[in-house]
Length: 106
Image (cartoon, rainbow, N blue to C red; front, side):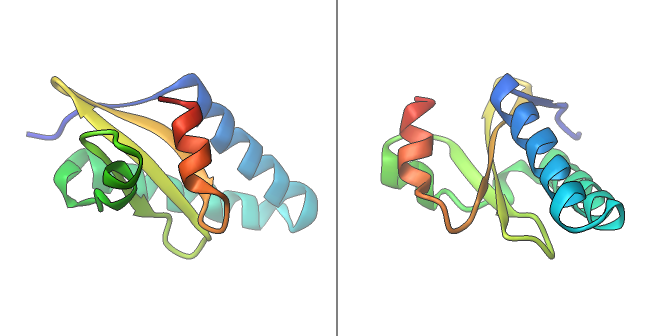
C-alpha cells in the first residue's frame, strides 16, 4: 500500500522557489518540466519509500532520512517516513552544502 506524502513548510517553499527561479532564468516550459519531474519523484517516494539513499541521513545523524534525485535536474528530495506518512523534508540543489542545510532543520 502506498504511503501518503506530505511536504513540510520548508519543502513546499523549496519547490516554489526552484520552480519560480526556473521560470525567471530559463522559461515557463523549464519550470513546468521541473514541476513534472518533482511530481514523478514524489510518486516514486510514495510507492517505494525505502528505495532512497540513506547516505546523508547517516552523515548528519538523522535516522531514517533518505533522498532521491529529481530526474533531469540537479536537485535532491530529502524525506523521512514517520508512521504511516512520508514527509518530504527539503528539496536541495545537489551542489549545495547539504549537511549544513539538513542540520539546520534537525
